[in-house]
Image 1: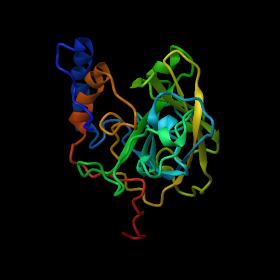
Image 2: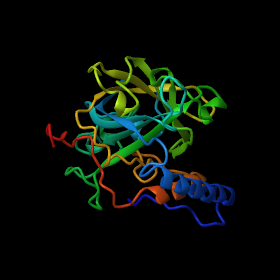
Image 3: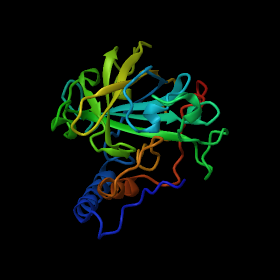
Image 4: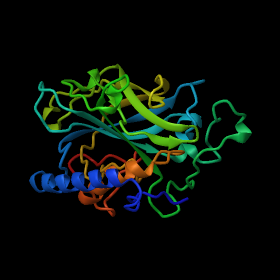
Length: 286
């Protein structure tokens, strides 16, 4: 199935289209000053896995409800949006790229609340690629925000990443309606949010709990995320786009695409290298 990522026609979501055009212009200006990333210009690459929580509350989204039978590889990047030096507060960003091999029909787990024979998840080919030849991965983009309504829709600066609630801010559509994602620290912390501060960093894991909610509803935990410092800190292949590479079962509304995709199209080449969670770290000295 082809996922539509382009902004909708002007007669749909005209306000969001206007906002998207303004943001694209602003991001274009910023990119001239901070190439190649206008925001989150420096980040630390992390590697780890996700494990789904048994008997979690369903969301009407295959990614959440169709629990894989085992851990799923993840590669991530944590960063400060404006690049302000710690301990100054900044918008903390956490972007995840999830391997989708676990959603293959032959290996996916049981849909929450249904027998195994009725499991319905996304079904990327077993060779790890989509029908178009691109890697079978999904991106999740989170930023420090509030917890309750309406704060969960607003960015909130933090001094430390482990103290932030990291939310998706904009909802996507599932089978039951709009859904938001959130991650909060259960234990540990990232080794740094700036690669220049990695000297002496240890391998202590950063453990986060992922949750989902309707726009006005309570948060429900559904997975545990364990991240560690990746030996390969080359992040050129880590340009994230949650609309272009959606999680299984997610559909982005027209107004969300209209507001955000012009900026992504301005600053991210469509044929850029995509680093996957199962890529091997570069050998030392290369």
